[in-house]
Length: 579
Image 1 (cartoon, rainbow, N blue to C red):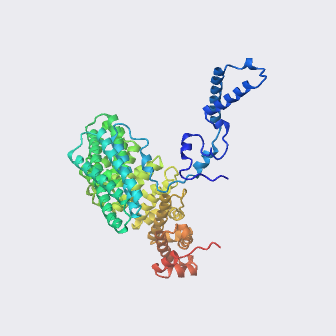
Image 2 (cartoon, rainbow, N blue to C red):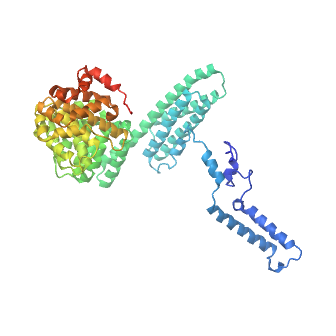
Image 3 (spheres, one colour):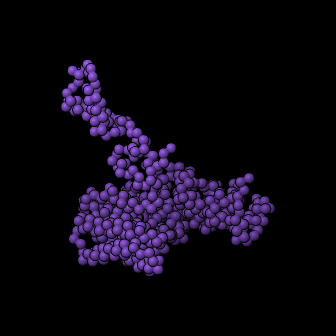
């Protein structure tokens, strides 16, 4: 077997397309160049004409004609062979080439497609991503004292920064004085970084390099700050233009296109959502949602609003423009399409999220809460798809965290029956994410005394016990985490409801205790989740207080009798036996 060539070996020959290993073995005739083939065959023909006694000379073409014909034939033969042949040498070299771990060339490939002409937003986003990645990589190489790599990447960073500035200037409106100053500072720092890192290549003294490293790090930090300021200013200008366009437009197609662009920006992360909120994006979108002529655009506008309201500035702007009242009007108006009401429910779910601390100060929400809760329960009941039910139930789940009064409203609206009936409908409830919302509502409602009787009446205990066995289908991290939440909240719900002896006895009858013990003792059954373990231990102890006969002595001594923290430590350190 031949040894693959080194990094630079046979590179020039490979580029020429004449094979990479020609000097080590005879080349096939079909892979020779056309001129060489033609000359070889011509020489054979000349030799035949010179043979003594050439009996067939009359049938041989003249030399000039012969030259032409033989050259044409060789070219055709060579071209035909190329279509059918595989250069094994080339394939071997390609397979032997190492894949670089540096991934330094990735940034050069990102913009291969390029942004369309006159598309400053995409240009800024793509160039911004590339430069941010380069800054991060330079910092990593600097920490490893790889000065040659730091310098080459600094030069490339300068090229990217210069390209971003020049390309954006070519397609954008007149630049402001502030942007011009930051552009100048950015390019100065880029040049300084390149110059300093180039000098470091000539230095071998470690003490000098160590002191220079701090200087380069500071330059890199300042460069990053200037780049961030420039990018924010440029994006702000583009967002302002989009918001003005939405605000001033009375054309449905223009508004649809511009709203779509705004939604795309919200998917780039929280910083852009903050810019959109500060520049009046929430106000402009609610203006769209209050015009009957734009009814077909409500879902798109509401979806964009839900994305913007993941940041505090978006929620504050929503409250300033009475956005909650607008959402309540949409949810309670049956003339709106289901898609529109579902997107309104998504906005409600976002602004009432328990994970966002700033949403707890929505004073305007309490005024419309009863209307909104009623409309959401109705939407859950009438949902035609799993996505609509998920959005409506997520909004209800978050509202139960938002205010305890919502749980009492849900009891009055017979929401337990609606939710439990939906669980048997695979069209509406078909994922662990949806079951997570349902069991969240039940867990929060279970603090009310009346909830237990309603759940027993609707055969809800069996459903809750079944949720303890929730398993992921795909095994993705998000789905596994959702299943953990379902198990945890199901155990919490059982622990709370087991205050009622009837619920506890029904749970024991359904073999709930054996499942809880299994979750406590087998880490794999709960995906090694400590939250599920604590909830299961609490539920088991509550059930054991009502029906102790359902436990074996070993389970009682290890899982119920000790302090909760001792049982937790015992189960969390338990190793599974595979014997």
